[in-house]
Picture (cartoon, rainbow, N blue to C red):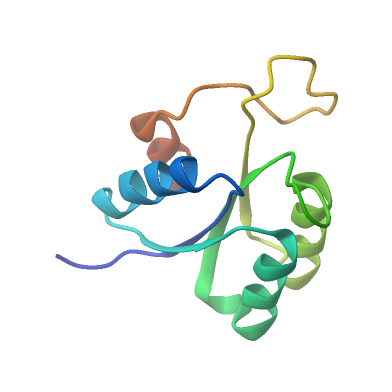
Length: 113
């Protein structure tokens, strides 16, 4: 099986990270998983050209939140795609985010477009 572009997944809950990574891997992507914004930024700084997209939780427990992470990621990789995810049921508060349960087909289509 040919490995596709690399996606960086930032999620501080292990089971959610594993579910997302598995569906992306099954969809042909290489996946790098990290649990914090700090670790995500270290990955991007080490090899920015490696990543086509990031999928980040909005509320990360330690360090910058997903919004700030995306801003910093785009400073390093201006054309990087960003998908935000959240399990929160309250208002998200920023345009461009969506609340949804993880749907591999939905998110794979977004990554391919």
